[in-house]
Length: 261
Image (cartoon, rainbow, N blue to C red):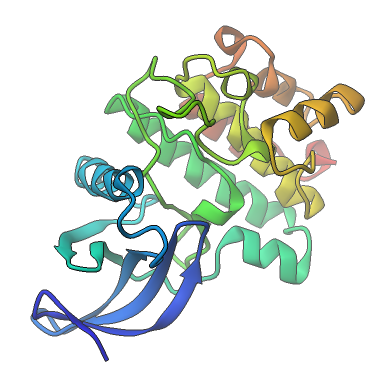
């Protein structure tokens, strides 16, 4: 078993994404379980990916909120950087939807209201997440937690990297992101509205792995109606017309089950 920084004893993987693996680990100093995120071997020496892990660490220490997974430590080894986070026992929302289909309404409301509050806290610190999606939401008994601020940036930041590739996951991006325009808090609000729809249906609104595929799918299938009618605001094409994340939380909590149908 690998020991990082003379302190974190790695266990088996508990999650995997496009560029990183998350391991369960034991913090030998503070005698507690933690999660350790490490780049995959093929990404570990890529400077853009290493920078994303450092950015996630810096962004994480700026945020303290019950619906945001806490960043506890950061370090670097010959095999690349690693990020230490609180261990959240639940599955991701993506895993839950894949395994069991749509969420019950009360759980949907709780999850989305909690993530809306997390986003409101991030926006108050001038951070736009830019990759809100079910795979970045953990379901914990104490409430949903938002993960992965590696793509986060200040409002007005670009939607693309230095190579012109769009940041984030196409199926959950706002129109301005798909077109490579600057992002802001409204971009996260749009993404959360799509997450809400996925909670209620068990699947993404549009399928596709690239921005072009998603744009074609959106042209063929309009933005769906969302609960209560008022949620048309949250998927408005114009970012200026979308309400805030804080208002999103209040609005979804005010909906009863009959209005959600």
